[in-house]
Amino acid sequence: MYKRKLFYFGLTTAFILFLALLSTAISAHLTRENLHQSNIAQSLLVEHEKLSSISYRLFKQLTDEIIFGRNANQAYVRKKQNLIQQSISQIRKLEQEQRDALGLSFTKGSVEDTDELVRLIDEITVEFRAVVVSDNKAPLSQQAQLRRLLEVTIDDQFREAINSAVSRQTHVVAAINARIDALNTTILWFALGLGALSIPLILYGCYWLFNQLYQPLILIANATNSIALGHYQKPISVTLDDEFEELATSINQLALRLQAHEENAAKSRKQLELEVKQRTSELTEANLQLTKIDSRRRQFIADVSHELRTPLTIIRGEAQVTLRMHSVSEDDYNQTLSSILEQAVNLSRLVDDLLLLTRAEMNQLNLEVAPVQIMPLLQSEVAKWKKLEVNRAITLIAAPDLNDVIATIDKQRLQQVLSILIDNAIKYSKANQAVEVSLTKSDSLLTIAIKDNGEGISAAEVDNIFERFVRFSKHNEGLGLGLPIAKVIVEAHGGSIVVESSQGQGSIFSIILPIEDIT
Image (cartoon, rainbow, N blue to C red; front, side, top):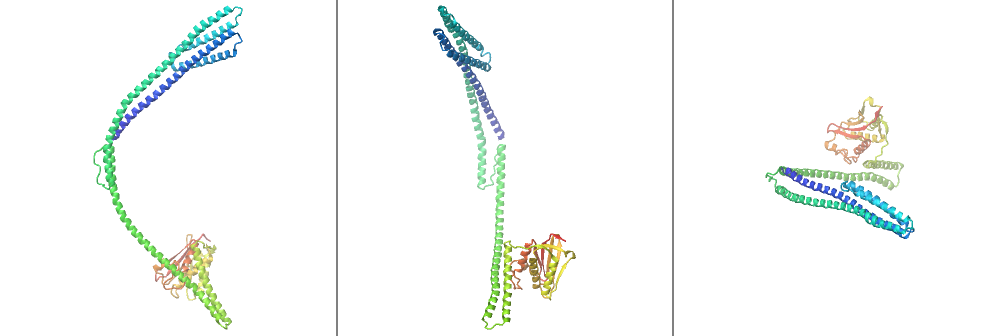
């Protein structure tokens, strides 16, 4: 309903504004036309006056020529005649424009007046020339001609003609000015009437709209203030116009949604508090894990220091004992040097392992890869460990079609991985139990599995088995670097290493490598 009221008020206001703009445009157009007509009429009047002035000066010059002889300034006469012709041309042009603008009835007789002036000017000029060229032997006759020309033709006929033209044009100018005055008066009264009608109407409309808006807006403002203070149970219940009723309904719905939102927010805060507690617990656990890792690193440093110190102490001790001996046989020297060499090799191997892990951490582990047949490599490694472990059964299992499998690998590094895994399988299984090495293929993946039948690995140990510096509780020899080294080497080849184990059932370490083709 309010929309319709507002539409009617806007329509009325727009209509009044349209009338005002239309009247302004019409008034401007008519004023511009009248001003144009007035400018033409004024210009034509001025041109008539200019023609009169030039003509009289020409007549004076011609009179001087008669009185003073032919030696008078002929150039001045010709100049005046040219000016007269220009003035006449301008008059005819302005007369045509005036007739086009005002119509024939309004400008009747103006063209005829101009024709009469042209005729009289030409006639007067011819008569002056006739008087000049007349015989000087009859001066009295010449004087009579001049007197008649001046008194009759010029004073009577020409003056009457020019005055008639000027008077006629003056009347035209006056008529145009009268029309302009009448138009201005009409515009003024129309503006006053339109203002007298529209101003009260607009003021009443504004007052009516204000009253229609004020009460609903007060109710809505009070409701929104209550909502802002958290009072959601005070809906707007007053019957309003359709538009304000829709707004009131929306505000009531907003209050209900805000209430529900606050309830949900309270639940969310509780849930968030629970999640924060949970995350805090997780962070605490992570911190404990970091503490454990730090402890392991500290233990590693201690172990490294011990392991480095042990061969260095042996080397230093062997050298000192030998040097303090007064008489040393060649066999004693050889034994001392052999012991020093053995410890130096162990020390070098330890340093190499540490450097390998460090390069892997920095992504600087360089591999010298080349296509290599896997079966001969496995056969060679199994044969080596059979010689080292005479009492241990080590078998190699592979399908015949895998004899020619080729993988792009670093041969020495993969041999190092196999040695670590086979050594661990022998070390962490019971005596005389077999170790099984198998080769399988699936799609583009090659799997080398090392299986033992030992005691197996506990779940807690399996989770940390590839971490550095971790050693099984029953076997404390070594630094716990073998499996981490095996892992970084396999991963550098783009593969992975996994372990499957349960206590009492043995363990399986699987090397999974990508292969390009099988020949």
